[in-house]
Amino acid sequence: MKFLVTASTAALSCLFLLVSAAPGEYVYACGDSDLFTIKEAQNYAVEATPNGRYESDPDSSGHDVLRAHHFCRVNKYEESGYYVVRAVKDRLALELWKYVDGRWMPCPILSVDS
Image 1: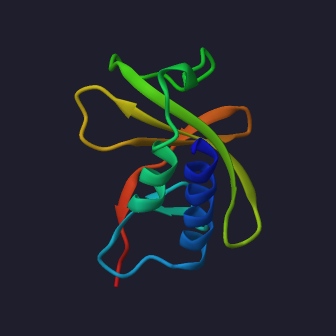
Image 2: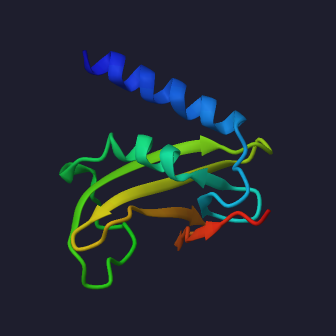
């Protein structure tokens, strides 16, 4: 059964790569050409577990990280990246980070301009 959930999540993630963000929508921006819809980040977060947290993960700024999931993804320009999505205690939104040049960079939530 877990295989079906994993396969479905992977298929949905690929589908979201084909759909660009609509004006007025909020996205996680991991760079100009590396955007995640909120739904796509939530789909990756489904796989997050307490055991997914690592010592090398980004600093949590004093917040308790409840779950994490590390994954690789190719953006629409065929550039691959390594990411971690985390559920943090006392925050409503997920945190998304990208590993770039040996360090973790936060992916802030931004509004897509019309």
